[in-house]
Length: 216
Image 1: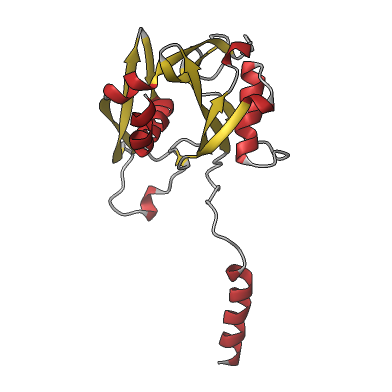
Image 2: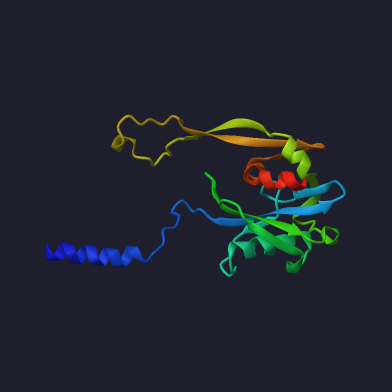
């Protein structure tokens, strides 16, 4: 009994002081993005980037400014600001962070930490052509009055050649359906906003709609 009590004491010391995190054994990585609000002639609007067509990852797709969290970044908020400055040619003082939305854990990685912020001087934007093809804005009023198209996507898994099927009764090599999730699409003036960007936008609009309706 004494050994068990000591074991529990040692486990308590090991685990109690450590805040729970996220299991990264599947090589999940973290990123931060900024959902930028700007003042336009049409009222408050959300600013989007079109990724440069020369990029290897998701060329030509629409996104928010942001990128991978680096080990020397002070915080995820700092990552969002740093990446926005690099991509749009702004200074840190040009960005006012309003707050953070819920983190998004994706099935393919990364873990995304979205922030909402105001760009004080959008006329100063000189985007980096190596990363950004163009920028455009969508009025908040339009976003609040136009529901996205919602489609379904299925996730499935299939064992690789080294998977020991003989150890898992009833398992075969075929694809196995796991779950479904929603994919959102906003179509505005020829632009198609979809995927994770649309999902974060939808979450922002849903969470902040009572406030946004006062100003849009």
